[in-house]
Image (cartoon, rainbow, N blue to C red):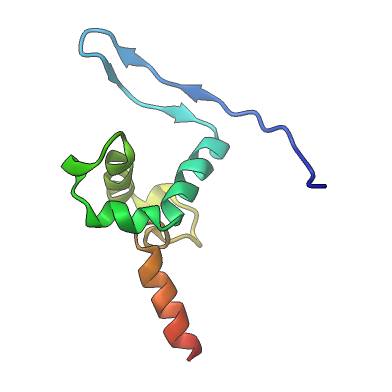
Length: 98
């Protein structure tokens, strides 16, 4: 049987009521990890191939936000291309093995 654990996540979204827009998001590490794990799937490749205008929902905006994210906010051993171009990283790994 798989072990289960309880994870508490926090999310604060200040909203401008006049423009009906979120000003910024303050989230816990678990929320960020969740969104990054979505991009690490092959969904990241699909999003990159589709235009942002053609995306339904917020995945296109999430991808663009990650593209524009400064390396200041990433851990030193992490690279944005791992999330933005997972298939490219996989091909480089395969070619280094062969």
